[in-house]
Each structure stands twice: as C-alpha cells, then as structure tokens.
Length: 303
Length: 249
Image (cartoon, rainbow over all chains, first blue to last red; front, top):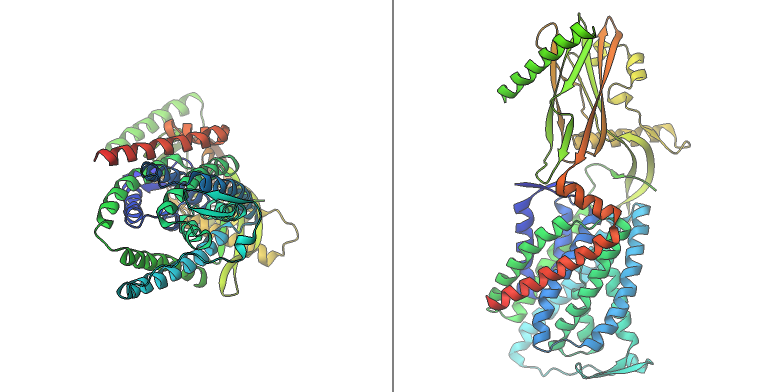
C-alpha cells in the first residue's frame, strides 16, 4: 500500500516504513540507543530527501526519548542539574547546527556533509565500541577492579558546581561544551547524539553509569524538539506523516527489543551493536568512494 | 478499463458533433479529468487525452508542467571521495515535459518549426542563468538534467504514440509519476498538414494536493512555527502513550 508523504513529496510503501521503524526500534530497545544514526541513513537509502530525513528523524527521536526518560525518572536515574547544563549547551549547539545546515544546503554541500559526518562518527564510535567490548569479554575472566576517573586538566577549570546525583564536583563549562557539540551533531545528522554523549559523560565527566542514560535522554528530548521546530521554520522539512509512521513501528519494535535484550550479555550486545555501526559506516564510505552512476547531481530551486 | 475508454470515446464523439456543428472548429481536445488530485494514496496517475480533428493531417500533443528553477551540480573526485564541485543554475525549466504524436515529430514538422514551437526534448527551453558559462559545459549540464528528468519519468524521451481511431478521432495516454510537481499544466495540441501548423488548441490541467495532503503541506509552509511545535507536541504525546502502554503490558 502506497502513501504519499506531503513534505517529502514522494510516494512510499507504508509497510516498508512501518517495518523500518519496527526494525530500528527493535535494535534501539535491544541496545538502549536512540537509533537515529541507523534510521536517517536508511531513510536516505530509500529515497527520502536527506534534508527531510534529518528533520523528520529528529521529530521521531523526541517521541522515543520521552517514552524512555519516563522509565528512568521513576527509578530516579536522571541528574536534572547536569541535564539542564547539557541542555543549555545543546540548545546553543543545535541552533547553530540548523543555521549551518541551511547555509550548507545553500552551498549544495549538505548531502556530502551529512554523509561525511556519519562516516567519521560511526567509524570512530563503532571501532571504539568493538575494542571495548572485546576487552570487556576478555577481562571478565580476570575480574579487574574498575578504577574511578583520574584527576587531570579538566579539574582546573573555573565555575565548579556540585552534582549530587552524579556525585561529582566539576566545572559547569564541561557539560555545556559537550552539549554544544552534541547539539550540532543532532541538527546536521538527525540523531539524538546519545552515542556520543553517553561515552563522553562516562569517560570525560566520570558520571556513574546508572544515571548516564536517563540524563542523556532528558537532554535529547529538548535538543531534538529544538531541532524539529527550527528545521520546520527554516527548511520546511519536517514530514509529520513520515514521523508518525516511523513512531508506530518504532514503539512496537522497541518493546520486543527490550524484552529480547534482557536475555543477552552486555558485552555481547555492545559488540553486536559495534558491528552494525561499522557496517553502516562502510556502506556510506563505499557510496562516497565508488564513482557515481551519473556524475551530476540535481536539486530544485537554487541559490 | 475498456468500458471507461468507450465512455470517453462517446464523449469525444458527442464533443465532435456539437463542436463541428456549432463552432466549426478544426480541432477539439479534452481530457478524461481536468484535475489531477494528489491525495494520501497518490502513486502517479494516467490521463486520457482524446479529441477530434477535421480533415487530413498529423497531430502532435505537448504537455508542459509548471516552471521551476533547477540547479545541476557536477561531482568530481577530491581526496578520494566524490563531492559536488561546479554547478549551473537553470531558471524556468518545465518540471514536466511530454510529447505524443501519430508518427515521429521530425517527419511531421521541419526542424526550425519544431525549435520555434519548442517541441521535442532537444528544444525544451532550458537556459542557464550564468551567461559566461562556456557552451560545451552548458550542453553537458543541460544534457545531464534532461537525462535525470527522463529517468524520473518527468520528461518523455521520444514522442509517445498517439492513435487515430478513424479519420477524425484520436487519443493518447499521459502518464504522471508520483513525483510530479503541483501547479498548472498547459497541453498544446497541434494539427499539422503539409508541414504547416493549421491550428492549435490549449487545454489546461491542474495538479493539486487535496485533503489531508494539502492541509499538512499548507500548515507546514504557512505557519511553520506552529507546525513545528505541533510536531513536537504529537511526538511527546506518542512517547508518553507508548510508555504508559508498555508499563501496563
């Protein structure tokens, strides 16, 4: 059954979109990630214009983050003070990101920047995750005690604040900077940015793992909401019909994923996710390197 | 399907009779529908163009979609990856261009007339904005754009067949793909005798978004801030609903 998307202005198979939402939702429930980094490239593969894919995916992430953060709130796993600082940075970063997006779109380079960002970030994160999970699988036998984060230059920064939930006393500049960086990624790549923020919170800030996911989801809601509104205003590229279809599939898929994930071990899950991330990265790299069928690219309008 | 055609042909005959007796026109043309409606289930459509002519002669039909600006980028390999480098902007390019005739257009009209009337892919009015672009480059960019439009089935490569049912009646089918632009389409029908255009008829066709499609599109473009907020509110509600359902389940 075909459905015509009013903003993307193409006709797509409704079951294909529901299936993609379900598949990515399953993975996001399984691994506890947003799934934007998989969904946006998939949408581009099936012919959704990249600008629409990025903006619409941001809208979908608002929904999946709201649904995720509520569960974490109930367990008290959200550091609101830290979240608000990350959020301040996120709003600055995503606003700048949407401006940059519009500017690059005008230059005719937005598709390239989206794809390159994916290649770089998926490549780095996928490799790091793979190494980490392999190490973890090996170290399990040795039972190495986990040491807390070490003191370094970051502890010399001004504007120190106390974060009771995270049991930290660090400079407010750090979470804001992380927020800015993730906000820019969110706007350009159509992702929540959890895959960058979660490692940054654990390894850079030294936050306890228990509060990291809830706090990052809390921040992601507001940043992706900001991206959605700004993209709607400056690029008219949020397709609400597409977002709703992805949502329905995603919600159902995520439930199955979460149940299935409970039966697998953490290191194995992360190793598997790392392989998927690397596969998406390789596919995108392949498309950039292989000579295109037609060396010309086309766009309506102009500059 | 056949029934529908028969009905349309009856209409055409009726049209012919009334037109020829009342107005004494040499050419009468009509469409199976004056409006193409883009609704939620739209996946392209086919229209039947039918008409009647008086006397001998060939018929050429040209459909032109609303004009739009187009930018063509050339991809080149830089540092191992393919990036957009040079670009050329074309103004007022027909978003849709389609020709039908009862035999090849080059046998019907001389080349200079085809050029003057802008009939055929070689004569689609596509001119770049930049005057200084050298002509070889211009031709390559133009050819690339036409190639792309043909691939997207927005331009017809060769003239589609137009069938004569007898000395008077003719019909042809026009295919509109799902990615067709909205706006006003002008359909020119030429009656040609001895390499001369005897008469021509212009029929207008409207391609419009209807119902929910139109409402969402207009909402997004006319009240974009409200639309963005609306999208976020819907997403929050859906997320909350999903969570509530999950807890119970």
